[in-house]
Length: 74
Image 1: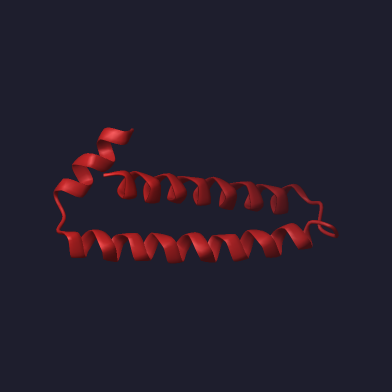
Image 2: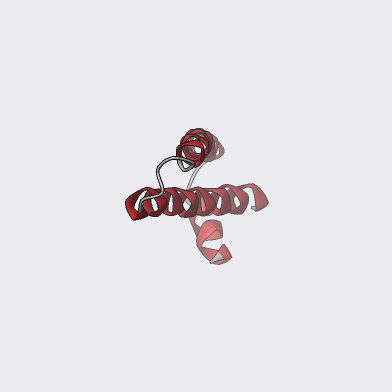
């Protein structure tokens, strides 16, 4: 999957990469806040839908983290 990031980064200017990185970082922060909120709610809401939403957000956060790492490594 690393090669995908390399090809992606080569097609952008440094400014475009920084803008993309900034957007990903903001999204990662927003997801962290949302996950934290849902984990606190989890004490009272133990439904499957709530757990499913929490897991989906954590997976998205991990994907974004990997994208950020891939961009920074190049």
